[in-house]
Amino acid sequence: MVGPRLYTELVSDPRQITPAEFQLVEILWETSASLTVSQVREALDNGRRPAYTTVMTLLDKLARKGSLSRVKKGKAYHYRPAVDRDAVLRHLLGQFADAYFGGEVHTIQRFLAGEPLRSRTSGAASRKGRPRRLKETGEPPSSKNEGEMDVVLL
Image (cartoon, helix red, strand yellow):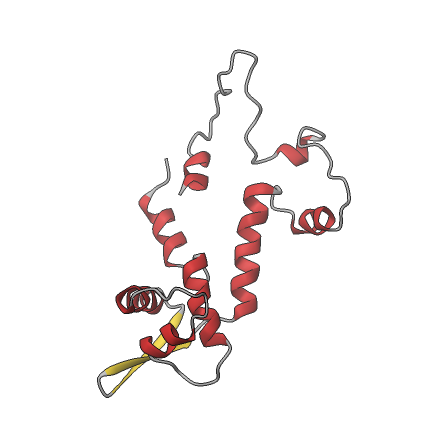
């Protein structure tokens, strides 16, 4: 089972940005000026704009975890990115690599280039930290690290 401390560290990492949050931060990365909630909402070009309060909640959440900085000017908060776009993308790609490619980013590159990937079961090193196949009975093998899957499910 994942302890509360590990979960808190994962959730409070400023580079840990959801797809919806990324969409908002990307607007801020594209401008040199700080923007208000209304300006960020107006810049969304996906056809349907979310409610003002939805954008405000996401920007507030990003500011609280350190992904954005904000300054109150008059009655409105103005937001700026506090994390570098490349750092966020490297972090998210690393998580993806850990979850699906055994932590090997170069394997993702080979996969995208169309190269065949080696089987998960070839070599002990490629199996390290990955779930094992189900036994013939359909039961998962017992593991000393049963809590590992909890981290993935969060």
